[in-house]
Length: 476
Image (spheres, rainbow, N blue to C red):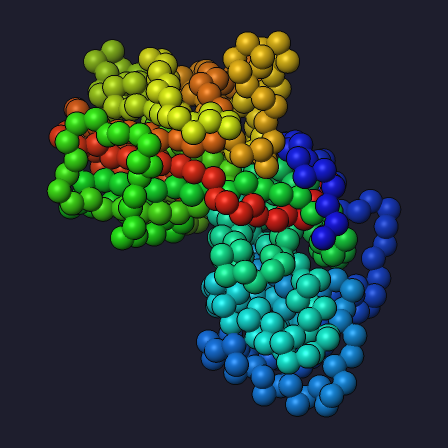
């Protein structure tokens, strides 16, 4: 697997011009038939994988082995499969799906409303590997060269990365690297790896160029982060898609819990790739998502979403806190304790929560809230003084920062100032105790939820790096 410097610096893409550049190869004409020859798999393999996924059995596709007639031919130079969230991108989602099917075979384009990524991994890829195990050289080379393109927002990209990450646990190597067609609102993962921040105006011609880049682009690494939430049993919480209930809920034993623990706990587990946050930013995101679900006609595309989001922010009390402040509008210091492990250190360390902070973010990438860099480009002397190192997407560290009131957050987002730097950490434990707070708001890679708080017992959120890194294709 060819790879550039594994510590590729992450640079956020913010302008429309950069977004278009990230989606195209300027001045290069891509011949449609040559592209098809390069990316389309042999028919018998496509049909075998389709049948395996449809019947939910990897062996089901082996009936197509006879179709090769002992001559399976050559593997394509750059075989691709595409996962598309056709509900993303406003009206462009369905149109893009049709365009992709024109450029590739229909069997290599998966609509996520019909085929889930784990079904492709469990049945489609396993079928390909079974052909390879039977001595099919074409299937073996196709599996080794295979790359994945995800057309969707950050949540969709994370979903696919998580399912592909299971291949590491099962020893099914190599893990196909992932390229992105940005269809979401923020598209921070797409920006971070050079695929642009929005769906371009010239998308019909741009799709060919994107598929071309997906076959040839260098491979980069991306840290992913396990998150475990432990709360007193009996609390009702509507968690996002990325969090799943789990029976295995063991917190790090190296850090003792102060106070009593409940007799029974409920646990959820998930993985994130960009950020986890607590506080007002999550509250605004939660309200916006519910507003959009109640009035879907408002969600006509990324630009409309951003305008509505900005307006909604002004209604949530982040800019103007009443003089008789409700406890839910006060700083996080009232309900939160933070412990971290620093780089190359096995001991937990308590970190003070700044009294003025009303949102705390643990960030993996240099792109947050549609391409902003709230951590900032820090000067060497400042980093040395604070004990920080230069941030990368594959350095095994999260940057923890705080946002104060809405005015402070606004200046941070336009990069006039940096956020409130708190720490860099290889592991984090957040401990919440409700007091007068009945609930807190959290979000993970753009998926927000309302977390109930308990007066008597703490809720814990523990974050640790996944041992295996995700694999991305650079669009630079």
